[in-house]
Amino acid sequence: MAIDNPENPDRKIPYVPPLVLGLETSCDETAAAVVDGEGQILSNVVMSQLDEHRPYGGVVPEIAARSHIDHLDDIITESLQNAGIAFSDLDAVAATSGPGLIGGVMVGLMTGKAIAAACDIPFMGINHLEGHALSVRLTGEVAFPYLLLLVSGGHCQLLVVKGVGQYERLGTTIDDAAGEAFDKTAKLLGLGYPGGPAVEKAAKKGTAGRFDLPRPLKGRPDCNFSFSGLKTAVRREVEKLGEDLTQQDVYDLAADFQLALTEAIIDRVGRALDIFLEQHQLEKHILVVAGGVAANKYLREGLEAACGKRGFSIVAPPPALCTDNGAMIAWAGVERLQLGQVDDLSVGARARWPLDPDAPAAIGAGVKA
Image 1 (cartoon, rainbow, N blue to C red):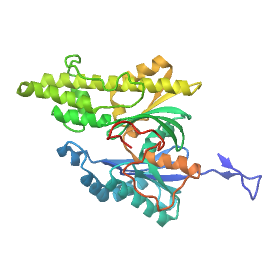
Image 2 (cartoon, rainbow, N blue to C red; image 1 turned 45 degrees about the vertical axis):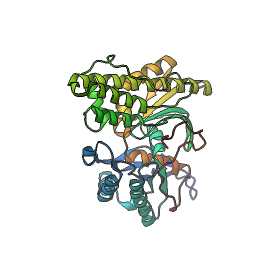
Image 3 (cartoon, helix red, strand yellow; image 1 turned 135 degrees about the vertical axis):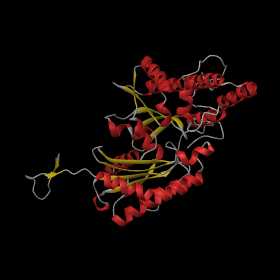
Image 4 (tube, one colour; image 1 turned 60 degrees about the vertical axis):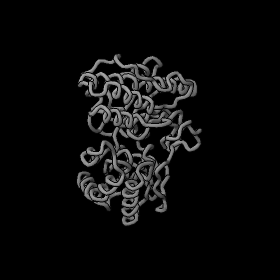
């Protein structure tokens, strides 16, 4: 590929895609990646903090922030080495500036600003949710608009992705995120942390249908989610069994929880699919599924069936890009850089940062950003 040479129209200038460093520190992964303007991932280094948080059954914000401080510099160095470049080769830096655990967000944000200032290159403060929303475009040609289900440990939302920086939220959780429900249920059942893989593994050994668990908000005309009541129902079943709780009880409860959560999500997604069809007459309708919970095979099968009934194709980033990573932040930076959407170094960290700030507030005190 080449571009016009203003000084000599008869001679083209070779196109060199920009190199963007992406930093992600919003929760319990310390990550850095280098991605070029054509979507080539030159490096993608992620350090998980699972072992540090496992004794507590969940993420401890202070531990997460201190771990980012301890390891981010080394992760960046490794990422640059893997990409075979130096700081001087970078064309821009992108860092998550929210939403997330504010201490961790500040670590990556301030580091990104320092690199951009030292190298005198553009800086972009990226919405973590936008990183997930656009990640599918890093690995495939997915055109706007498309419907997005973002389902992770901290978020559960349905959004219409109309373009970079253009989002319409159709639904969100009014209490817990799906990943939180998995973690809390796993803790109740003594299955360990993280809860998603632990519950899915236990459910394979159980039989669904034994316990009558609710499907929160099923049949409602909106697209919102709720998982707090489902988690509470599991706790009540555990309390009823008391000391008589057997390992098979745990497996069966895990199977029924996974079934109830999946059916609740599919019902909400089905409503969003119908709304999207009403609003958009396209040759191809796509549901993008992103976030760590998207790795659950049982949920994935249910979503594929729901999409098939309505003529939707379901697309998901590779598993390594579904969970938090620096490549998705770098790519969001690439997309914004190409549109000239850069930030100055006064951009601040945000604990909450909705993709659609004009969306009506959902009923419930715990709505995620």
